[in-house]
Image (cartoon, rainbow, N blue to C red; front, side, top):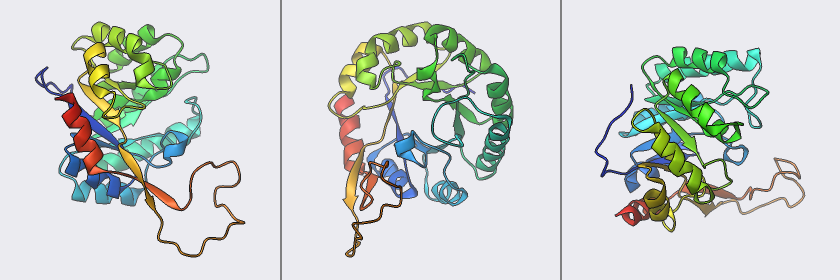
Length: 254
């Protein structure tokens, strides 16, 4: 189940918030897309239509995040059933992998819930997402995730940005060896990826490479926000991955 590749190679996974972003990621040279919805909440499971059309149009690998809501990673039995159903749908639609992560109230890897999700994934590739960054003990959690059979861990080194977490990322890469892939993510761009790669020893990287695309709406009601006053996003701009930014980030690794 684990992927292997020459240690001289680097691979970019693009966190894509739409089919349009997925296509830009492919055009820019990404190896894989992680398809998500609700990026301001940290990413949630995308729609059936998004998964189906992305799979139809993409030639590169497609992973789907399995996360029923924003917030923490302590899930109820009902939410577990939702995640199991979402994995079933992603598999039926031809996704290459899923991205999961369940924790206990004590901040440990929930072995029971994650094992059930792993069983549902079958032969699909499985990434343990940044729930890892909310774990109490990163090294104990690393061993638990390896024992589950996950292919990789997406992590910022338990810091807000991967560049701040280089020290822990380096330790994780060393302890993981060839047992699991450590994939740094959060705040990675063309300006810092070479340093993160060199100092951490990581070979796969997760980034969004998005830019704002102004809405074509001419009339804009200034009194109403669809997300309410607490939402701090620009509702008249779409954040879309840019192929040029993906390409520049790859070139920075050269």
